Length: 141
Image (cartoon, rainbow, N blue to C red; front, side, top):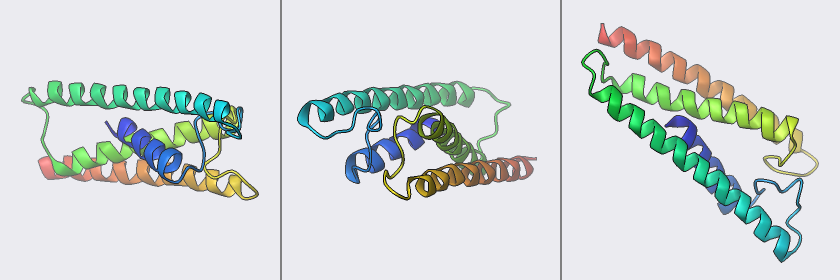
C-alpha cells in the first residue's frame, strides 16, 4: 500500500497541484494543448497503476489480517507504509528521473538537486520504515 500511496502523493502533489511535471514531460514537453493532453493520458495511466498497487496492498492486508500469526501493531503497519513509499521514491527516482529521463521533480537549472532530494526522501522513508517495523516486532514479543 505504501508504494501506491507514495505514487498518489507524487501524482497529485507534483503532477497536478504544483504542476511541476507530467509523466513524460521531458519527452513530450507540454507546450501546446495536444502535448498537454498526451501528458495527461500518461499521468492517468500512472494514477491507474498507483490505484492498482493500493488495491493490491489492501488485498494483501486483508489476507494477512485473517492469519493468527500476523501481529497487528501500529508501528509495523506505519513502517510498512513508509517502506513502500520510500521504495516508490527510490525506484521511480532512479528509473524515471535518471535512467529514462521521462521527467524531473522540478525541471530547470536545479533539477538534479530536486531529483537527488526526491531520492534522499526515499532513502529516509526506507530507513524510518525499517526502524518502525523493527520496533513493532520488539513490541509484539
